Length: 290
Image 1 (cartoon, rainbow, N blue to C red):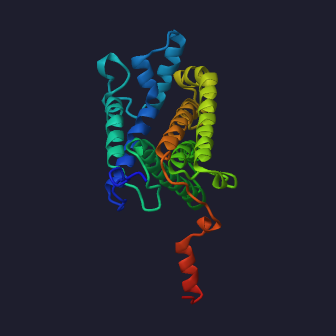
Image 2: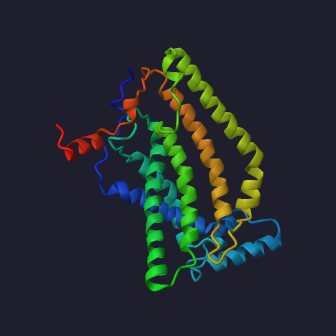
């Protein structure tokens, strides 16, 4: 058995830093994403003058701080630069300070820190999405003054939640698996199944990225395609590139899982795995059973 003591993170205690770091990352990421036209115009402006004019008008319309001048002769102001610089710093801090809860997968490796931190970001996104929906319900039915942005912002968040959850589920080994054949074969054949499954994921990811990266990163992202509504968020320009990025990360994580689990003892799955012991104890107490 592989010793996991050295690579097991501190058990989650619900400390404030476990909430603040992913929240700070989301704030910086949200600011940077909303002001991406400023980065495009500053770093890699389009060759077409009409496209430059179109994107600059979009930037001025969406800029949260329109009165702040751009730095270094570009469109990105000091807050845009600050968000861009802080993003990788906060991400590294988040991955280095990650703590796992007792119910999470414990046989992790340091390379799994990225997926674990993405899981924490997903949790904050779910909380944010819930708060936005509650706010919209209150305004719509209590004050009768619904917003123009809550529904689309929730849709935007939900897209990221679904994508990030896929990476987190892959790292946690909690995706749907059918063990009917897997459990009855010897360990060497189980490893063959694991390698085959990971290889299929990698092949799928490769074909998907190869076949769509031009449309996604040039047509959608580089031209910063908007949603075309009153709020007009850049959902096509952000979600579609993230699909390819997450698919690549999931394929990478699948390979990491195969390597990490290679020397583990075979795990036998039974019907008892589906029983929640804590819930069972609560039921026993409720009926007065010992």
